[in-house]
Length: 107
Image (tube, rainbow, N blue to C red; front, side):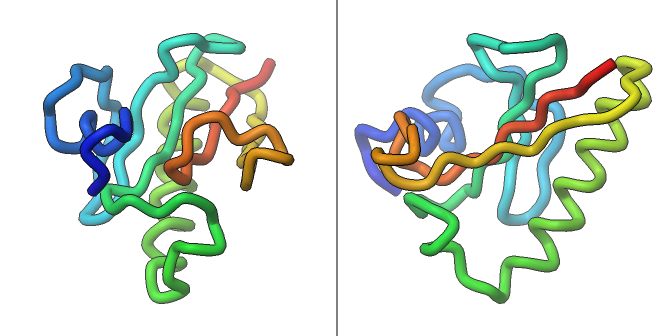
């Protein structure tokens, strides 16, 4: 983990975040600047910068976790759908250099 990384500090419990779910290697937290109600971030517990850095062996766990969190948010918010977004590298709009996937519930 990187000492200065905000998501690494959240994983370590040094910074508070509203956690809505957790698996062995991933955590779901509410975005502090939500674009829509229920805007949630999926973050890996290890410090990987982009999707290119996440080992393929984590793929099944990540996909299952994303699906569970999307189902939970849709149920709790009575949402009709959702968007998944991930910015990879600065040129694509990535601001926090720790891999993270946005879930945006939609009605």
